[in-house]
Image 1: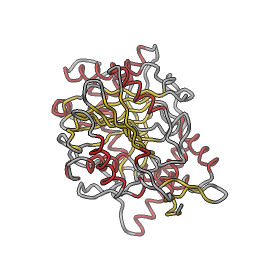
Image 2: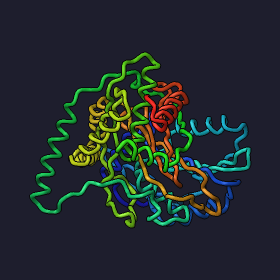
Image 3: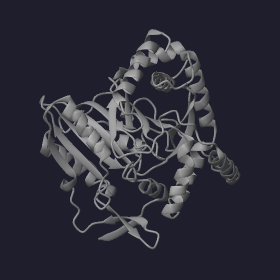
Length: 424
């Protein structure tokens, strides 16, 4: 084995957040037209991931008394060991059970920290289920990998890359930024914990994932024009209304919920080819679950997102992750214990390509992903745009949301109400 390079601090922080009851891996499902062409797909992964990105060939090793993580090149890297073929019988129920099983099963930390399953389905179609640890990449760079596996270039992203924070280059500007970031981090640490409304419970090992029927992007844009918001505002308002319905059904009085939202810190140029790794900050946004009208929800969401874009919170939390990646593991656990109670769920939004992709002669019919819930949260919402449709996925700890299908139903009903201009 050959020691290649130290795992960067932020990536190391995500690696060490891993717990048996909360694996820090991104799970995705790519639905293909027709049966999986095993040899073609394997060759595609070898040519566009394995050969081009060393992190897919390297292992994680640890050095020194504090177990500092390093990327290590094994003597005999084995790609095919991490590509598994599965034949499922039993239709949608079997498929759902398989996805839940993979979502609940941590990756082996002594092996390559990724795994692909090629799944043959009873109806003759196939899907690729991928699991990639957060130490390898964040959602934006994985979206790029998705494009590179298909036949699109980077300009195929859905609209613009999410707005990134612009940092001044002058010494005085950077010094002021450091001071503001430090003050913001101190403010976050001293925030009181958020009261539990039944969505924060000790995590177990059983996870579940669901997603709504795709929503036409043109319909979302039409609602955004009508309500005076953005596509993001509209989708987040649907999430807020759906959670509100869940709480009311449970007999709980809704109140604003703090939500972790990943904020991109990469360049905004869609032609830039991202490196792997993690370059985003986690910001706290208020989800207006207590709001009783669509106008109020969208207005408050817009106000919250504008405040985030003008502030330094993304840089403050990114800096905190860099520091925790340097600290001994017990201290990192303490930091996570400080931040975990500040929020109830995590919501992430990733733009995808504007048209259907081809992948090794397969048409990619659909795609969805679910992100891990950092800081011991048990409820996450993923939003993805692809080929003119918006997809909303929900990943939960089964102790937190025992019936995720019911939660998805609340989201769906909320969207139908918003589209029709009805109260929700």
